[in-house]
Image 1 (cartoon, rainbow, N blue to C red):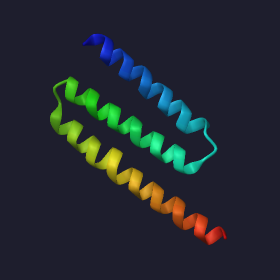
Image 2: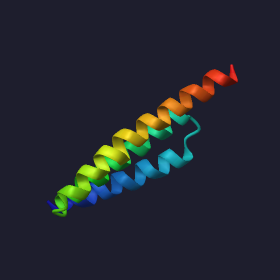
Image 3: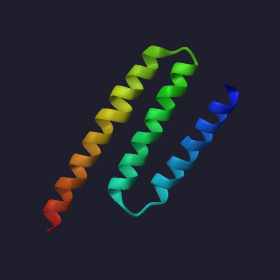
Amino acid sequence: MIYLDVLLCILTVICAVAAMVTRKLVAAAILAGVVSLVVSYLFVRMKAPDVAMTEAAIGAALSTVIFLIAIRRTEEEER
């Protein structure tokens, strides 16, 4: 199981760097959500389910939705 944890940590770093480097805002918001979901799973593996549920609900779901709504509204105003 330790190999899975290391693989997920590497995936988190790759997705975080990709979110910083990408030029597309929607892709960056989705990658940030993926980072939050992976971190949430890692919290579950560390026996912290309360922190994992909070990270999944707020970090992955709510923040990603707010980012996507903000991106959509700003793109509409630019047109």
